[in-house]
Image 1 (cartoon, rainbow, N blue to C red):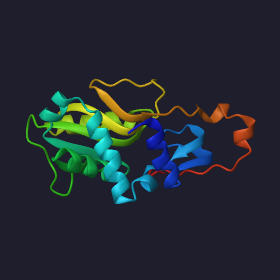
Image 2 (cartoon, rainbow, N blue to C red):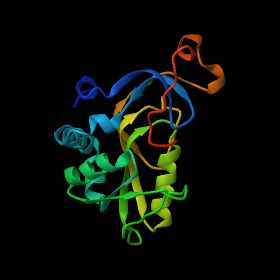
Image 3 (cartoon, helix red, strand yellow):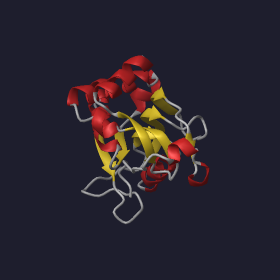
Image 4 (cartoon, one colour):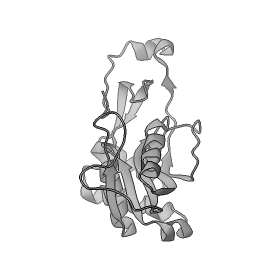
Length: 192
């Protein structure tokens, strides 16, 4: 899938939003990618996951035992990546603020895992999810996401593969441009 084709999927599902958004990271932006909307069509989610799986190096794909994704945003794309790779998929939750496995999910010692996200911006939740996998005995082979929104400002201890890199400007609360500050702010993500 080309970058234009990926963006077409977001536009077709009205998932590329413009306004004033407070992101989960605490930063502000005039653009928001609502991956939940792009993934609500099962066929679209399947196409995106298949395209993302195809971007992974063959040797990496052959090593994967399990797909793990953080709740909430990663659940659907993680499930679809499991389907695309022919692997089981499970998710992490953080009911008490820290990611962990629940619902009978767990890993065997040394189980080789890819962590799947919808969007990576600051990388904080991705790093927390990878730590939870390692704490459960798994080995994280790579991080993958539909969208890399980090602008190259984030690094990981494992390879990172994204279907598309998008750099929308983001601002700290004390440096929001006047034209953006004039627009009412909304917080569309899954975290309060």
